[in-house]
Image (cartoon, rainbow, N blue to C red; front, top):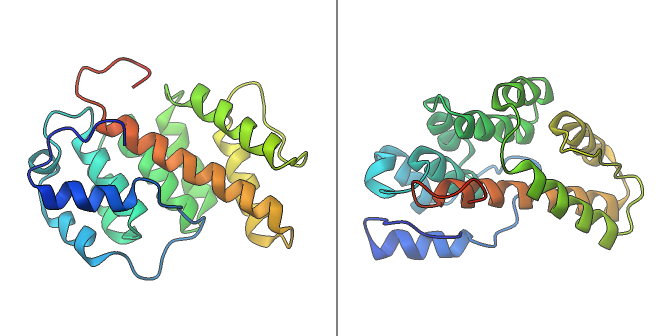
Length: 187
């Protein structure tokens, strides 16, 4: 959470702080945070005024809080690269890899990808996971394949590394959406 922008209440700030470092599992939660889920009925720009993507910030908070269905509903209403990106992540967690790949095609080359690739490489190296082969550029389709492999793998270290990269990706996108409107390309 780079900058919390101007949420409309201290209660929202406290809620966001609870999820700032939360691990995001590869599969959707069965029950999300009720306090966060209640925000889905609010207008994103009333919650996150002055940020790059108010709807993206809300979709991200809901997803991190385990409110999968609510996050999906918010992301579905966003016709932006960030909305498509959240949609892709949501379907990755469903899991519906084909649908996730479809939404990633709509994202195109997101400005987060170089940072994400750098962070993913560091995680793979730290975990000494040679099986995590990453291309010269971030390849969302390849990472979706690795997520599918992790779901079926008995290799706990591999699964942990993939889940960590997935979680980092979710948090990078949330930070991107929370960047003050007019923020630079690198957030």
